[in-house]
Length: 136
Image (tube, rainbow, N blue to C red; front, side, top):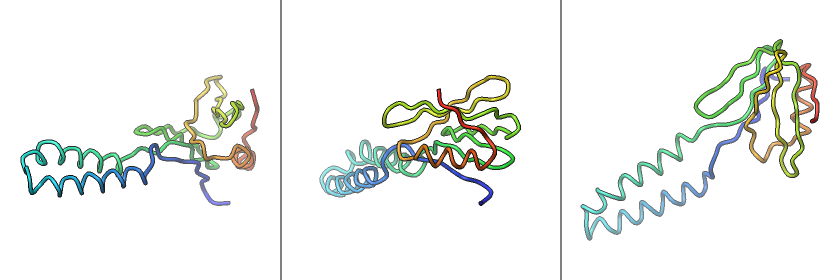
């Protein structure tokens, strides 16, 4: 087994963002010949914002290792030593499962997982690392 197992996803849809960026570039090129001031005032900031959202979209999920676990929560990551984890709690909510880490102190930390993660894979990897899994 590798050093870390990662369950991560990015918010948004990269394909749609790239299509939007292409459409805005085409619109800017079309309007540049007619009214360059309009392009400078409106379309260039829209292009920059679209590019920013495509490149700098946050990552959400969980990175599990033998010594520590890291909750990837967008701009902030929380590192938790494995010895402080009591168990992993999973709540079945139909299509998706709500997952949280319960610490030995009793505090529960929610894990922001995307919809494409399989709960059985997460259970298998957590138990391989020595962390029990409970359902609530």
